[in-house]
Length: 296
Image (cartoon, rainbow, N blue to C red; front, side, top):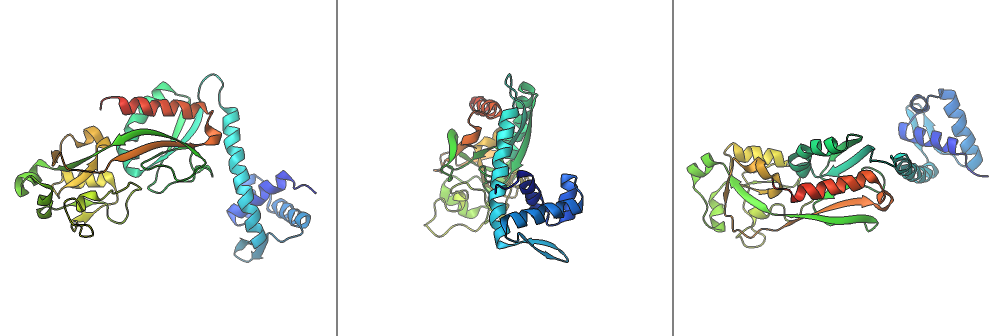
């Protein structure tokens, strides 16, 4: 016998909430009505879906299997609903964008006003995360990533190549001196990301520049935040390699070693196949490309 969609919706709510009462509040149903729906679903499937105990509910192995599928189905339905309800005349609705904390805070967030001025019926949720959110599971609609996408089922477009600037404050360089060669960095305090780094290849390259492989310089401080690193440099703490997408945010700092050999950062715009025809995605992509080629 086919599974009732209403019962699956109730099951998913209970599985996520961990109790009949909390699921009922979400669904606007009584606790007893939720309980009856779950009992009927278990009888229809002839398997227990939850272990019931005094502190709440725990999914059985069969319940875990069903919930994985149900979560994926409802995620796909939510994506389809968003596409179907999008305005035919102009882009509208919410767009969930994810990118790294550094790029999101220093480059993207300051430019979103221009996007919303152009498309006032779009609203943006900006999720800044240094791990890759799962676009297939609708953790976000689109992503700007500083590496090629690793999931083969995602549409990707290379949108930019960024370099690095080695920067210090004028006061720090007056006190310690300006490095003339990469080897001179041995005499300077360095600021790097440390172990909690964003997904950018060779992000701590400055610690190894001009050194034998496997013998990096010891950093004076490790900071897992690009804005935090910029403020540390600005305070006179030391030198840091900063991505040039920060742009005007580095105007009050002094660039040193401009000819140092540094890796490149390759940026990609990424979204699932299901979002291919979304007007919101299209206008956001066009906005990104236009902003990336604009001066400043």
